[in-house]
Length: 174
Image 1 (tube, rainbow, N blue to C red):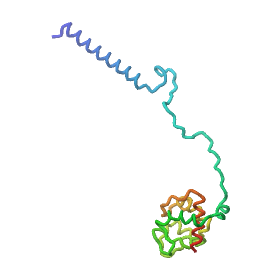
Image 2 (image 1 turned 30 degrees about the vertical axis):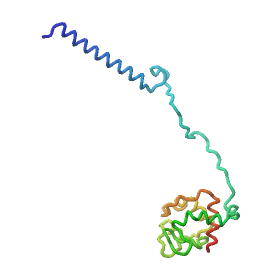
Image 3 (image 1 turned 180 degrees about the vertical axis):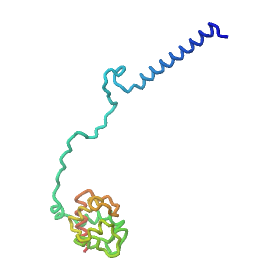
Image 4 (image 1 turned 90 degrees about the vertical axis):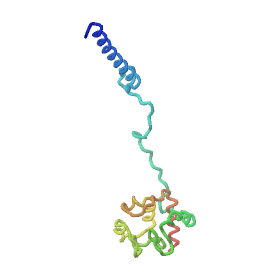
């Protein structure tokens, strides 16, 4: 049954299979090598591209603009009325509440003082304070930053000029 010819064929097939396996491994290493240089002799890996995240650099000093009092002194109520269009979806100026409380007379009014409106706990906790122009500026810049936990979902007005103009406009709605 097993003669020398059959044994030679079996050993030849085994050696041939091992040779094909080794050649496939070398080809795979050559195609998909993750090390730099030939065979990884260098030890240093070079990325194909680099994304600059700015890590390691010193942040540039933020440019200081004019202070709030200077901006508020030169505020334009007419321009604030245009910016207030963003607020009209939730706030009214006729004494009726919408999604948010009415804003007529809000400047220098006590916080959380509109009767019948369901304020968030954080704003209800500020009821002893008033909505001064400075407080309104902080709230309008970032409602969630000024009063974490507020129900107001508006992201805020990033431009200081827009904020002071809206505050000046709201001051005329007394």
